[in-house]
Amino acid sequence: MPRLRGGASNERTEARAQPTEPPPPGQPDAVAPGLYIVATPIGNALDLSFRAVAVLRACDLVACEDTRVTGKLFARYGIATRRFAYHEHNADRVRPVLLEKLRAGARIALVSDAGTPLVSDPGYRLVRAVIEEGLPVTVVPGPSAPLAALVLSGLPPDRFLFAGFLPTKRGARRAELGSLATVPSSLVFFEAPHRLPESLSDMAEVLGDRPAAVARELTKMFEEVRRGSLASLAAHYASAGPPKGEVVVVVGPPSAEPLGEADLDERLRAALARMSLRDAANAVAEASGRPRREVYARALELLEQDKRR
Image (cartoon, rainbow, N blue to C red; front, top):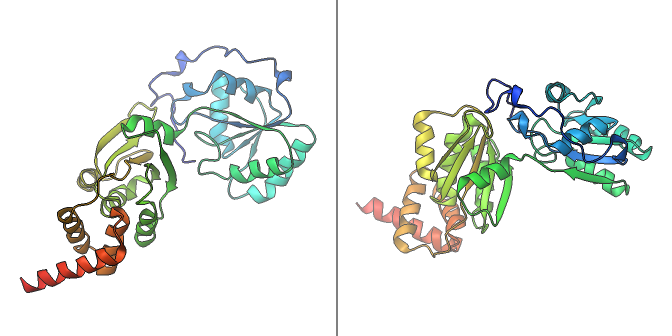
């Protein structure tokens, strides 16, 4: 998961407000052997739960995305458990080592740099391997940037799809957005700040000008949620420049109302101003749910009309 780091200088609550001794759910020896998926703070270090502290203290080993990042958190909470690096670059080599320890009865916690493990990190393969071997695995839930952004967005949370990071290249990004255009749910994305203006613009063209929200620096001192239509958000960040900090974008579901002819023409003209005929027709067809052949034919008519003017 993206690193949403926050030290004492940028957290809402200073370190001196930290609870002195979280009451554990049981004595350390009550933590049974197995793999524990433990969520860690996405910015504000005080979001680490009492249960998470107790489990992390009781485990024999903690598999970390970055041992240095986790070490800072452990120092704050007095957790002395040995840390072991497990990340995308060494996962294939380290996974068998962790499995061997679990078979021998070890208690291992899995953490990411920030948030809930397995969300945009290599933990999934480890969990699958543990499950396939019939070894015990459980979760200590907690902070999650996609869920935090979703509930702050003001958009429908009852049905949503987390789509992670979009492709960095524009063509691939637009194709991915096209595949999501008719999904009847809110969409949640991670995005790099420097790509945010162009990604929002592509979203507006491919998905239609839906309501959306851009959440950044969640749980930190400069937390901000900007809400508006995709087009207005794209215009804002194109003018203001990329924001600082980590970003989550939430996009509302497609409208249940059928797209009228005037709206169809408006979307097609906007798309044709920036794309080829084929790409414009495909993008608008995906966003509107209209048949591609019908949308393509109408796009041709609009181009012919413009030529006669």
